[in-house]
Amino acid sequence: MLFDLPTPGFSFELLATLGNARAGILHTPRGDIPTPVFMPVGTLGTVKGMTADELRAEPIDAKIILGNTYHLYLRPGLEVMEHAGGLHKFAAWDRPILTDSGGFQVFSLAAINEIDDDGVTFRSHIDGSKHRLTPEVSIHIQKVLGSDIMMCFDECPPGDAPEAKQEEALARTTAWAKRCRAAPRGPGQSLFGIVQGGIDGARRLRHMAEITKLDFDGHALGGLAVGEKIEETYRILDEVAHVLPAERPRYLMGVGTPADLERGIQAGIDMFDCVMPTRNARNGYLFTEGQRVNIPNAANRLDLGPIDPTCPCSTCRTHSRAYLRHLYVAKEILYARLATLHNLTFYARHVRRLRERILAEGTRA
Ligand SMILES: [Zn+2]
Image 1 (cartoon, rainbow, N blue to C red):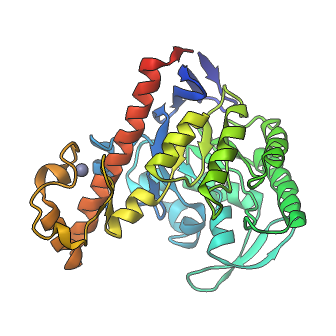
Image 2: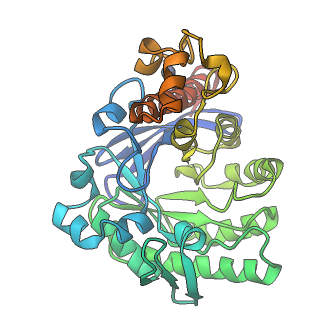
């Protein structure tokens, strides 16, 4: 079943369902994105350590990557981005890009000066300079970046914030979503709304009703896996993901482990992003079909086997655990590249396998 999305050039094709899990294709002017999909995070316009060619090539074959509005706005800044003609040209990445709104980073990284109904005033985590982000400014920055999927600017209160604060943030997020929806975008730029509400299922559903009324191209669940117990994350996923409109893509922001992705897909999520494969790689943690490999571990010192004999990535086909451990211990920069290539391959194959299972065992939509 093919559903046109509100932004011209975008459509969502549902191919099969298996319980609440779905397999589909998000069609965009810059290319098709088979879903479920894992989107590597390119915070500063780079998926750390990887070239665009490596990301595009098998076995990673990333169909879409993320860019971070907050980081790119502060550095290199809008003058450079405008001069370069947007993030695609600047980073030599011709496939779709999703940008977040900057909200999450402002609330987690910056020193907040003031939150009011109009926006947020904060100080840069780099040089302490003062900036103001509003829904309109966030959309303008994402317009200059030229992303294919923009996210609404939302307020992200800490999970343990008092009841009144949570409600205030929720009301603000809805008001800001309306302003984001009304702000001018460039051609080929879609916009996703974000459902907040913490780990209170009823509050999530209430907010979802407000956000889904606004006719966004897709919907995201924000504010999960931000410190709550994983069982709470899963409970909310099970309660709300399948209630999101079936004819639009569903995105779970910033989550998580390979097991989290599987649970999210089972609950009905189509899109994921997380720094885990790239960050863990640099920190010495490598994902495999069996146990996670902690590369600095002494057990790897004389191990001439690959990280994962079933992995088709060039790291596993070329190098041993002993060599990788040596590079890690010696702080050689090649280590980060080889490890990242492997972990991104693992995530890509993991999600592709789950998608294939839905297509093979599910009901044609
Ligand atoms: Zn590998």
